[in-house]
Image (cartoon, rainbow, N blue to C red; front, side, top):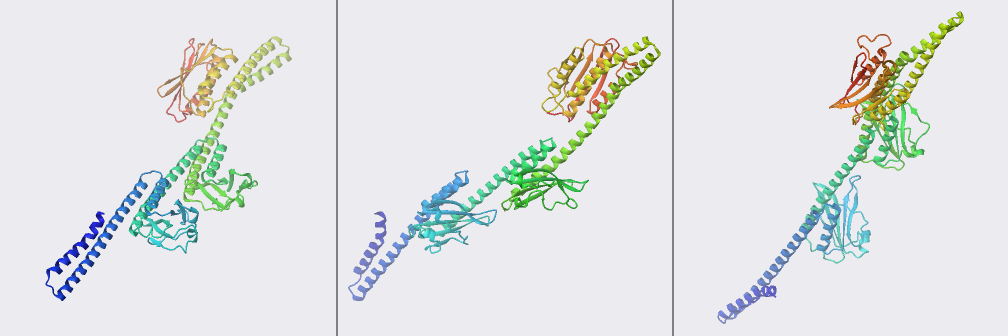
Length: 574
């Protein structure tokens, strides 16, 4: 009512003013006509003013509603960390404000730059089946002749809003109404502003998705790298590489070939996937100068989509990693990056494992050489004496010197017993194993216990609570040193008791092997009294693992051998 009074007031005022003017003039015909014209003119002017004021108020009211709706759209986009839920809330606000029945959001795919459906809110999502063309500006369609699927569902008008962020198109928003005029009453500026807000949200969501995918890929690559680099066994390493490569990008088959520089051919080292994906007859194949061209290992039907990446170290190709699928597809840049990453890690792991195997082979060779020397210094010499004593006894028997022959046979019996003891001791030592499942302390404890039983020499072991492990190569050398030291005790010390004691001082591990036997003078051990050959062998072993060996012996007071190994030596296994 207040609005009505305000609208009629100018008309009443104009009429009163016109009547006042008319009645204030003399009663002259032309003046009377003039007064009437003034009244009519003022009435028309007042009417125009009323219409203008009403339209201004309606425009202001619509502007206020649009601003409020825009604020709610922006609030919806900012109120949720889940981008999909935020977009859904924003579209619901748009539909509520516009009274439209449906909204379809399309976005441009990063992979092939095509428009793909992103989200639908409202009625009949299946009716938005026509792929739109991104318009240059907001486009209003008052008829839907070009969209029969929408028209068949009762939609009568549609607005298409281009979405662009950072000067790049990201999609399009379609809003459809079932009653004429619902969309026409909204300003183009409002649609444009909403389009910019949605475009920014789409771009941010896409960037967030890309970052999350990148982080997920990096995590998968990191985990695959851990699996590869943590594998020390060469055969297991090769299987791990092809398995992880196939899993990382969802391939159906993968193969790893390594380049043999000496024979100048590729050698198939590992495959992963269905057995019918590979040419089982291919074990190696030539390929020019080592440049990989096309994988002959994976059968053609599995190479409808195929990627191969070289394994390089120091600028040289050392292998090639291939993945393949039966279904044609384009591999994404992120998948290529994943395969490149696993190929780089595989090249490093292959080189490292080969180096370890080379070192292990050298260590095994050195161990065989040491063992050969020890056999020569003990068993071979005893067997030589047995041969001499046998020949001497035979000569005495031929000459009829029975007493001398019996003496030789007694010595031969003693030598046989010593040979038997040495052989048992050697076998006992070779059976003592270390590894990831059995550390140094349990291995030494077991050996000392068996040595005490087999040699009938009470021997104790005390680790003093030490819990430290070294690499298997280091532990083998330490065990061999303990074995050699105890062997010397059995052969030379005439001891009643022996011991092995293991302690740790700061960053030094100390192993002490001692006895309560007759001892000797280290400066002048004398023939048969000092373990000269054994000491040399022990010293070589200890020095090979960056340790030191000390010998303390006093005639009549026993002998002590002390071995010290620094933990800073990187052979330690934590």
